Length: 312
Image 1 (cartoon, rainbow, N blue to C red):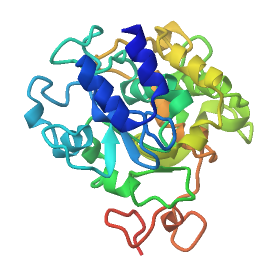
Image 2: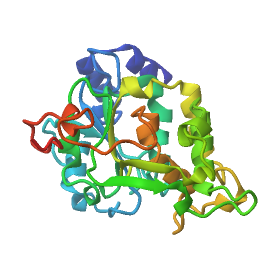
Image 3: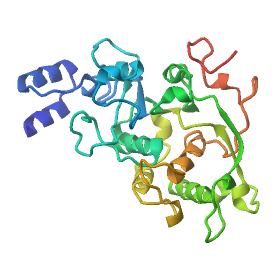
Image 4: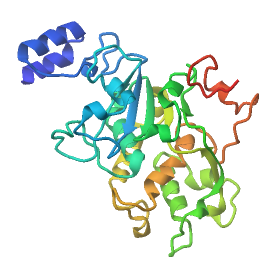
């Protein structure tokens, strides 16, 4: 088996790989065949969709899965698709059927899956990625189509259209020990792990109390991003965030979470309100989108494209 695996690593011809797989009767999804053009797991310039699915589907009945998911996984149909889905399951660490997909710890809602993918593939990322929640259409009518309408020179954008305006960090409970908002403190810690001055980013005017600062951004953590923008940060930085996601709490026992249970999601909630800062390189309190200004979403999406979020 060692010989076969090494052969797979060095043979870049997809046709040769298929012959080798046939000889040794090794099953391998078509999506894992190394591209002969760029030596990557991923097809060049094809959108890869990473959904944070948990119990939104019946894992044992794949024919019941949403069409967008089945098509992206090439289930029951070998026709070429304009995108590929990389699926994690968060149920069985051993990945036994029907959960025979790569495993991700069930932590911090969608943020846990997003970080896991970046941690796993940082050194071989797809050119274009779409990170979405387990029920993506609850937040965007056409999430995949919108991502395929993003302009070629754009490195990050939300594909949702619900605007959060002036949400203060103080809407969440405060730490009883220092009276600072727990979500603010967690967000500050995450930004520091990326190399930011968290206080300066979250409290640029140095107001008191600091958690009265506000967030304005698109809601709900579904976004398109390029490989180049993720590589804006080092593997060590992303690894530190991934490892932090496996810790029992973000900054204090008061923000401890129980995976899979209801309650405030401090770590994931902080990320949900920071993706536009981390990957969009925007201020925490973004200006609202406005037509014919530099905040116009038509700078991000092509107008003549089905599913575009450019409305004119």
